[in-house]
Image (cartoon, rainbow, N blue to C red):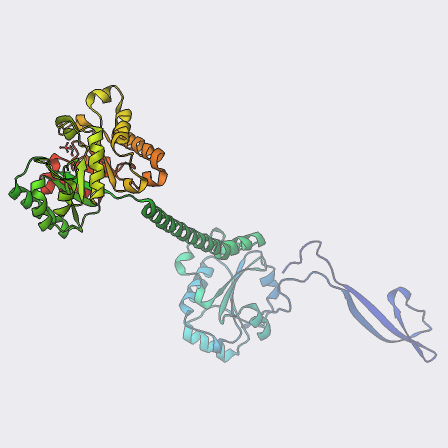
Amino acid sequence: MEIPQGAKKPKFETTFLMRKNGVEKAFSLADYPDSTWTFVDSKTVQIEAGYVPPIHDFAIERMNDGQDITNEVLSDSGYTFLLISPHLEQADDSNFGAIDQIFEYAQEEHIPFYCLTASTKEAITKWEDITGAEYPFCTTDETTLKTMIRSNPGLMLLKNGEIIRKWSHNDLPKGDELNAPLQQLSIGKMPTDSVPGKILKILLWFVLPLLVLTVADRMWAWTRWLKRKEESNKIYQRLKRRKTMRKKIVAGNWKMNLNLQEGVALAKELNTSLTAEKPNCGVIICTPFIHLASVAGVLNQDIIGLGAENCADKEKGAFTGEVSAEMVKSTGAQYVILGHSERRQYYNETPEILKEKVLLALKNGLKVIFCIGETLEEREANKQNDVCKAELEGSVFNLSAEEFKNVIIAYEPIWAIGTGKTATADQAEEIHAFVRSVIADKYGKEVAEDTTILYGGSCKASNAPELFSKPDIDGGLIGGASLKAADFKGIIDAWK
Ligand SMILES: O=C[C@H](O)COP(=O)(O)O
């Protein structure tokens, strides 16, 4: 092995022990005495270390001729393969095929290949017999060999006297990897395991996965937090809604359409259908007086409420043809529609008459579905808000807040009733919101928030979902589409 140029040389100091006239004294070269002193002894010690080669205390002796080839190996500027086995008799021989292949490759490429061992001649011969080894063997100190590589055998590749690769016998380069001169192969190059490279490797193998795991863990925790937040938000919203939630209702107004048998049959059909599949809203059917008692007998009123379409503005007495609120109540009904535009228009029901009816209905324990709504002319004159407000003020705003809680408002634009023309969802929402604000002004926000405001006017299964999706539309008062169970159920299902 060549010592690099300018490498630091070790420093030595020699001490001479001299005697004169029976006295012994030590001198150095610098103050060496004259010839009257007699030399007794000398001692040389190293006082400063010099360059230490990577491989030292190392001697390679070729076995066949006893030649020391240490210098030859360590100063070779090319490649050298060294198969290291302190004791061949203890060496693992399972990978001898791979070793022999490397030896063949070394021969083809004119690369020296030696097996260094401290084994006896007999052990070497036995190894040769077992493995078919044809490479030359050299003797090297056992301890030195053991410190060079732990695997027995192990392979080393030297270049320019420096070890550039080490392999355990389990991990030897395969024959197909040795398909070019060593200079062109990655194994023939010094591993680039510089300190930054090692740091990078540590980062890649340890820190990076840790980072990925940490990020994944944080993301998992974050999504869980989001989910929990969303969940608690949902619960909060549900609680909030429950707290302020007014009743969602789909009410049918049969008007003057069905005879008794038809009415009872429809009520039964509806009852069966909604008993089988519970509605997601309150359901009411309002029938002519003649149906009430019979229909009350076939309805499960926990699912379907029953109401009349009208009641008298008088409590009792000689009012031929009239039906009082008390009579309605006695049939088993719980609701009554009052103020419907058809009653106002065709039977001249004034705000004052309606005020009386409302009072009597409430007095008799009926809940009132109170209708308001503008004509087409009023809508075209943009008077819908004023009309609705006036109708409320004229007939129900005389009630106390407590009484008003038993009133359901039904906004029915007269131009949309039975005409097939529906107010758009936005038009309806606008006026519903206005009506709610008027109620809030009169009774306060809480009462207003609890008041159910229904929409009526050509409402059917096809437009109900959009109408009911509006925040201030709490359901519908249905005319024509309440006369068939399937049509009516289609509207009820809009709340699903
Ligand atoms: O009371 C119901 C309304 O007058 C709506 O009737 P309609 O659904 O036939 O338009």
